[in-house]
Image 1 (cartoon, one colour):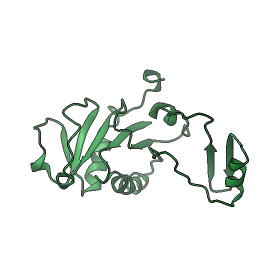
Image 2 (tube, rainbow, N blue to C red):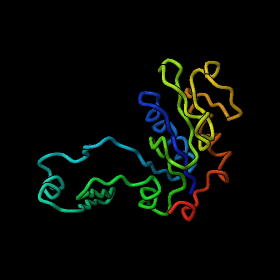
Image 3 (cartoon, one colour):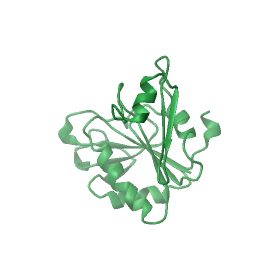
Length: 177
């Protein structure tokens, strides 16, 4: 499986890019999974529904499944920040690509998403895991770089770059776990 981080500051367009890459990769027959970093206290369960009630009653894990979907909800008894590598290890083995959204500090190859209009700094000069930069303003990059600069508004170009990097982006869990 290939793994790439999609990293940048809030509001840069990470979710939008991931949302646009998924169907492009799926269209050529690839299975795509996403690992997403969320803020504390997020919930994807609905109050009053069975799974919510089971968690509220104190279940450590709740697995809910149908013919089309499986979801695992796990409660941590103490605050626990899993590494991106531990989360990748939880994924189905038959996936072709994992897009990791967020996890700016992760030790895996990543595409930095940067917009000049955000007024925020860049990561690439100090983060040797940045493999490429996707931006809507390449001429405004504050530091010269030899990294590949991709058009943030052209997800097909980003997908093409990913597909050209399959060997480089092959995930080797033994290096991390």
